[in-house]
Amino acid sequence: MHYGGAPADIEGLLTVADAHELTVIWDACHAFGGHWRGEAIGAQRDMAMFSFHPVKNITTGEGGMLVTDDDALAARARRLRSFDMEYAPPGHETRPWLQVAEGVGFNYNMTELQAALGLAQLERLDAFRERRAAIVARYDAAFADIAGIRTPPQPADAAPMWHLYAIEVTDAFGCDRAAFVRAMHAEQIGVQVHYVPLHEHPVFAGVRGADALAGTEAVYAGLVSLPLHTTMTDADVASVIAAVERLAAYTQEASLPRP
Image (cartoon, rainbow, N blue to C red; front, side):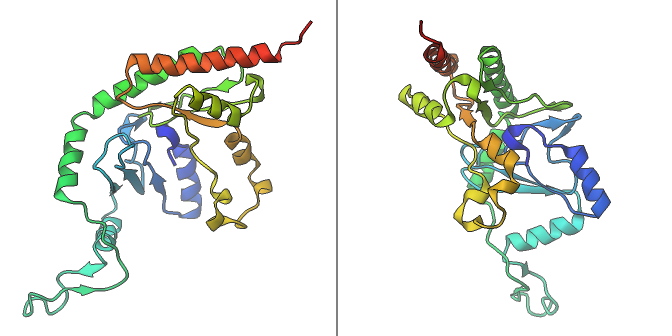
């Protein structure tokens, strides 16, 4: 998954896939519009999925897109998208109405209205990327010297399409993640946590214990997403920064030893 819009370890994962003859399917839902080593994220083999949900980098209202340069995979995906239907089976020439379902497929067809919205959004993609990058730059600068806040790492060889600005609140900040979130909400700052780990969802309970996912647990304990979207004004960004700075000042003051 290209989390937050920054590319995953593409080269490393492709190396593993080559060693084991695996097909690679990228979750690129956060990364539409980003680049890695000069090419669009999603252009790396074998398949990539994008989301056009209303909160994503561009939207069609709902839905998404799958891309691949493998003709066989593309044909199979198109079939599954439309009920796994064969529209020209043997006998179609003499019975032109004949269409048959050859397996269990789905109804994942995009409407014309959604496609038109997506095309209009594409024309604004560069402006969206620039605005998101500008907000991230302001956040990075503002939080660089605040103890206990780890900002998102800047990926090498990449021009991300920042979808999330997920920080980690560590012990040095002076309060835990839950207190941070409550304080931000009290300041009318809409922070969120992306995401609750899969093994904490009931549907996956028991698949793997938390003791086997210590790294995941450690990151999740402090993870918080600050507001990041293209309609934020400079004043909105300043409000987020000011709220974090006020909380940091309060927690640092509270932690000082009293004479």
